[in-house]
Structures are given as C-alpha cells and as structure tokens.
Length: 113
Image (cartoon, rainbow, N blue to C red; front, side, top):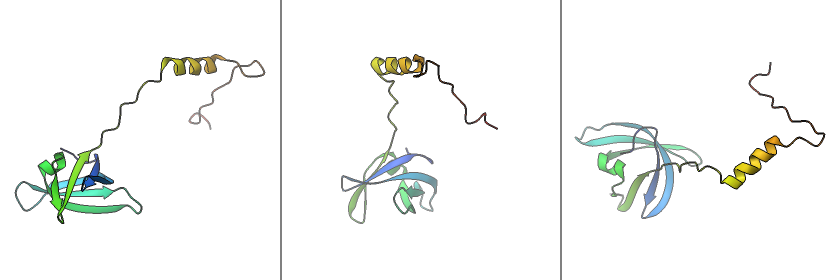
C-alpha cells in the first residue's frame, strides 16, 4: 500500500496521466475508506483529495467517472555502479596532473569563510 510521502503514477484508461505525491491518508466516515490527499505534479501544482479503499492504494483498479483508474507506487531504479572502463577513466583523470604539471587542488565550498 502506498503511504504518505510516496510517489505514485496515476493511470487513466491504461494511459499514464500524472505523477503525484501522497500528502495525507486519513480515515473517512465510511468504514474501510480513506481520504487520500495527492499533490499532483504538474504545472501548476494541484492538490486533490480522493476517497479510496486501501486496495486502491495498493494498485487495484477502480473507476472514477466511468473511467478505469490505477494508482501505482513509483520506485526509483537502483543506482548502478559505472562499468569498470568508466571507473578507470575517472581514476586516471583524477591522478593525471594538469597541463602545467601540478596536481589540482579541491576547494570545499562549505569550508570557505
């Protein structure tokens, strides 16, 4: 089930419609239903509140205005380490002296006064 702070993709009629962040999930007056506030990530940003069952927040399809809607949790892909060849090139660049033969100096932006 999606929870507060999750990024979701809302699909309407099997077509991706928009991404949204789940802002708030609270109980509704009807048992087993929730008031779900979504921050729709579009221009301009819009906040909507839908009354949904838990299963709908878990990816089950439902209809809204006669159209099929699905809310899917978006999981960021795991960051892949660069291939060995790229890592080697990065290491070589770090170790290679500059044109005047001196090694570069790293200056931290946070240590500056």
